[in-house]
Amino acid sequence: MRPRSRGARLITAQRAYVSRVLLPPVQEFISRETSGGIVLLAAAVAALIWANSPWDNQYFDLWGSVMTIDAGIFRISEDLQHWVNDALMAVFFFVVALEIKREVLHGELADPRLAALPMAAALGGMAVPALLYAAFTAGGDGARGWGIPMATDIAFALGVLALLGNRIPSQLRLFLLTLAIVDDLGAILVIALFYTNDLAVGSLGIAALLVLAMLLMQRLGIRGFAPYALAGGALWVAVFESGVHATIAGVVLGLLTPSTPRLSARTFFESARGLLGDFRRAFRGRDAEQAELLAEEMEDLSRETEAPLERLERVLHPWSSYVVLPVFALANAGISLSGDTIRDAASSSVTFGVVVGLLAGKLAGILGAAWLAVRLKIAALPAGVGWLQLAGAGLLGGIGFTVSLFITGLAFDDARLTADAKIGILAASVTAGLAGYWFLRLVPQPTPPQESP
Image 1 (cartoon, rainbow, N blue to C red):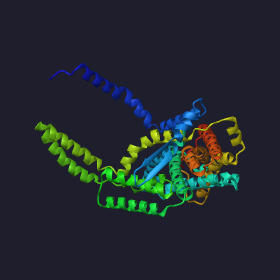
Image 2 (cartoon, rainbow, N blue to C red):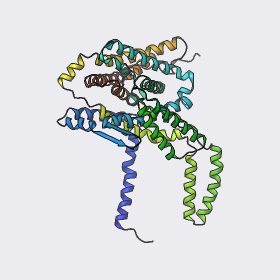
Image 3 (tube, one colour):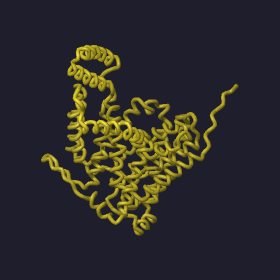
Image 4 (cartoon, one colour):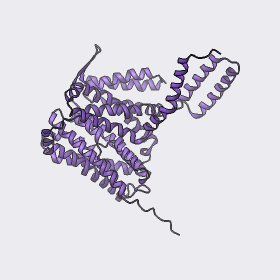
């Protein structure tokens, strides 16, 4: 055998170092529930620092720079911040739709008895904050922002729970996760129904035809990525041109994604057994090329045993958590915190409406609706979870960072109202996170019921 060159040995050593030393910590960081919240928080802090630094003009010039796509049949011209909010966030809402569909078909939302409590709590946690905000801003310029305090940021909320470790029962995490998913569904409906511009019927018709085309492709057994990617891109353009917010295209695509694998476990076993026999014969015959082709065929076969929904969620979730949301925070959390801006926010009904809605409204809505559902015997408290733990979850529900900022951009064109809302969101989210953490850390655990002798 010809000895390898020094350069080849160095490359091999570098790859081994990366795989053994560098990758494991990165993989462990990404797998932790707190990690997404940490990266998102870092991006928001970076945006605030940048927007209040000597280089603040560069920050606002960057996100205000205009990018144009002219494909002949359509032309879209937006500033960079709107490209992030309209296009990149479509990926986030696509992943959210995948999670909602999985939970409805195979998760907690599939069992009405288990889903009743978090669903009721989510509805209360959306309605009460919106009503409180409306009471503060009734008749004013900020009245359109009633949807801002309805949202719960799932990444931050679950990140805080993860910091508490074994101090909180696992059922409380499941309750908050299901509540946040229902909350996301509510936010999607609010965006689609109430934060939509004038509708272009022709573009809506094209979007409907594209949806039918994708359903037909599924019916015909077309599984390739390229046709669906092309149809999905066309759907995004059609929804954008229709006046409905473009991120709804991501939601539609997520809900259209098949949730069942193409091959059953039995079919895979029977097919794989034959391929293994062929692979063994090729290996013994030293037919490396044939063995490699059979290995690739087995890989393709195993991929067909995983539902497209599960595969896409697994692949895209890290991108959504560690790329899409941090970029969104960097583009939207930058506020110039001058003395005048803070004074205006301190006397603004929009700021008060957001803060009161996220802090008092979320707690009262979640806890009150849960109590009513239990009292009416529609639902029951999860095992190991008491009312104090549920109150802690209600506090964490007041972390409304991501979707609240997103709805702010849809609700207001006025820079002053936008700044007032963002200051309220940041203040309320930080307060809710700290209050929820310390409340759940200090509250005694419920005493489990003792069995009668």
